[in-house]
Image (cartoon, rainbow, N blue to C red; front, top):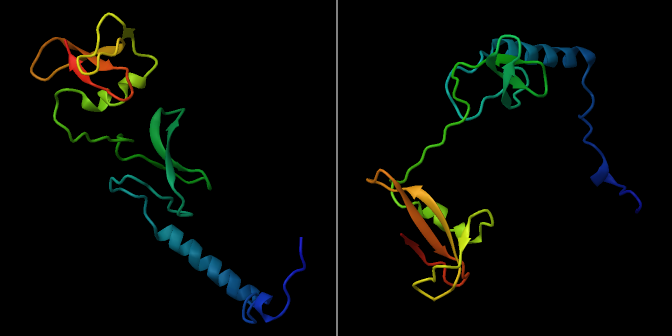
Amino acid sequence: MGTPLQGPTCQAPQHLGRTSSREASTHAEEAAARRRRRKPSTAMSSLKFCGECNNMLYPREDKETHTLLYACNSCDHQEPATDTCVYKRVLRKPAGEPKDILKDAATDPTLPRTRSIKCYNCGHPEAAFFQAPTKGERGLTLYFICCNPSCGHRWRD
């Protein structure tokens, strides 16, 4: 590709790489002692980390005991899960018309479509439809979405 750079900018500092085997073993012993002092994480958090190598722990099932474990993919460290909740999704919207579903529903190829109802807004002859529960009602409500990309009008039956 090119010639390697030469000169003082490519040389390692003089103090690097000059550790004795005694210093290296001391550093390794200190790191091992720090790992032994760490306790498994007991507080519920969204991410758990390995007490041995500080990599992320992933949920796994112990096939023999059918229990939930957190295991490290980098080393053999495993710890039993103190909480059986692996994932929690909090919804912060009131119940009612499913607006988040309606936004992209007109482009969803899996939704049924009808040509028997025209859009009240633009007169387009095709609408996608689906049923969903509505707040305060026991049954399902039939929702229509105009398939005209420039319109996207929504209405219910």
